[in-house]
Image 1 (tube, helix red, strand yellow):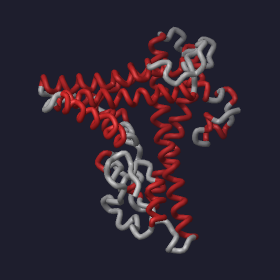
Image 2: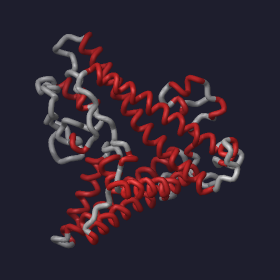
Image 3: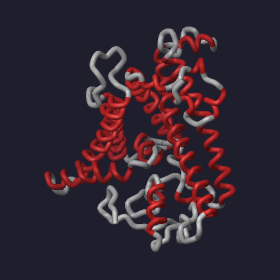
Image 4: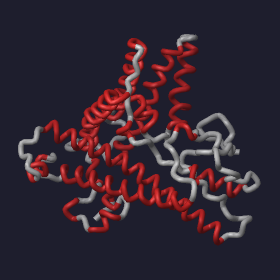
Length: 338
């Protein structure tokens, strides 16, 4: 009755081991289940289980224990990296050098400071996304249990199915190529709309212009996906944060395209990896592939981090020198004003 990014009607197709999680006779229950399913897992227009990380335990007790453990772990990573980035930006020279000097490294090179800040922002983004997903999962779990306890069976939501709430992404540091970093490890929340809007559309356009040239269509589709992702980031930063430090123009969402250029570079690197495999017959994999991927993501990520910090992205983090204990405990409290 409603349609998503795909051309199929939104229907419940289920996942392995879900039982009858969504009753087709309960429109209210089905609508609620579709609304709180962030990635549409189990629905015809959503992600498929094989695209996502392994789910948490099925039984409620172990599931809740693992979920709370993930919240604690990602909260610690998120807080540490937000503190690092904000401390750097508020230092006397706007870098990590004063902090590194206190740790006994007064002559740390600037390139090392940039790499550490790039790593910090990347870790903050990863842990923040996972922390948000885990918190939403916990709210959905507790809310479902409470409503099923208080409401009569005819009005109660469907049972909470743990397999519908897997982690957001596989650990990024385990990727053995840049291609697998983006397709297997980073979050799949936008996988379906990106494929439908950018990749599949590009394939069809190229097929009409150059019939039978699927390789060209895949190349154009890959670049289109990353261009779309970059434009989304540039628009969000331009609209929500504003121009670079010292800029005289008022905030304009499309004034700069640093993020678009960076994401487009990711697509180019993936194409080069495919070309390497096709020419040599060898996949980029194993320890060497992991070293290459980590090096590329941290190195190129430090450039993107500098772009974002020039847009005053760290201004949204409260001054670490005034943090009280509750900011270290409450999820995302470092972003609260005051």
